[in-house]
Length: 312
Image 1 (tube, rainbow, N blue to C red):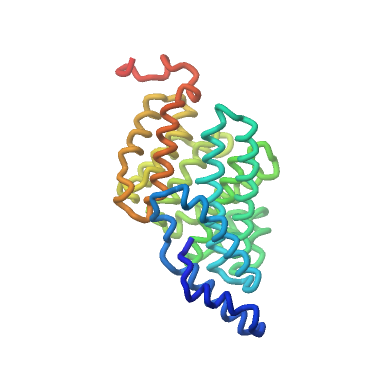
Image 2: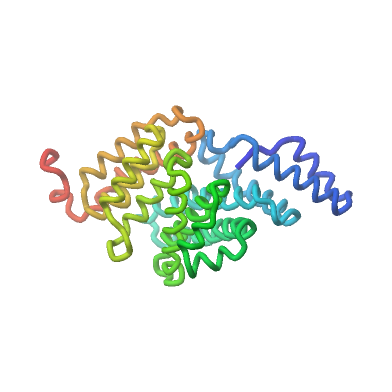
C-alpha cells in the first residue's frame, strides 16, 4: 500500500465538479501516485496501526478503480493488499485464537477466504487485460496459460497465485477450490522461470508450501527443503518467513519437533530493522513464532518421541 499524498487528496476533492474526461484524468493521476509511491506500511513497526489503516486504503483504491477500471497499478495493489491483509491480520488471528475459541477462529477463516478470493479476482482481472482469456485458460490448460505471461507482469502473477493458493489453503473443504491447485502450481513454476530471485526469494518460499502437499498431489519434502535453502540464499537472512513456512508446513507434518523449534528460534533471531521494507512482516511473523513455541505441545502428538536424542 502506498502513501496518500496531499496532491492526490486535492484531486479527489475536485472530482465531483469536473467533466467525465477530466475526472478520469484526475483519478488516473491519483491512482498512479498511490500505486507508485513508497510502501509506508511495509516499513512500519506497529502492526496494530497498520491493521486499522489498511481497510480504508483498500476501499479508497476500489473507489478509484470504479472510475478507471483498467488501471493495472490499482488491480495489482488491490490483489496484493487484500492478500496481505487477509494473511497478516485475519488468518493469523484465527491461528492464534483457535486453541481457545474454535468458533471464532472458523469465522475468521471464512472471512480470510473471502478476502483472498477478492484479491484473486483483482489479480485475474489484471492478467485478463494483458492476456485475453487467460483466466478461463488457467483452469483448462494451466501450464499453457501460465507460459503466456511475460516478465513485466511477474508481480501480478505472483500475487494472483499467492491469493489463489492462500484461498485453497483455508478452503481445503471446498472441492471447487482444490481443483484449482494445478493453476497455482503452474503460475508459481512460470514465475520461477521468469525470475527465481523475484522479491528476494518469495517464489521459492511459496513453493515450500506447495511441496508440503502429499506426494499424490505432487508434493515432495525434499524439494520443499531445496526451495527453503534457495529462499534463504536469496533473502540473505533478512526474512523470518522462510523459517516459519518450513516449520509450519514440513516440520509439523513430519512431527519433527526439534527442527520446528530450531527454525522458529532462527526466525526470532532475524533483525527486523536489517531490511526496512520487511520490518512489518518480520514483526508480525516473530510474534507468531513466539506464540507457536508457547503452544507447540498442541502440534506434536508425542513430545518425548518427537524430540531429538540430544534434547531428551
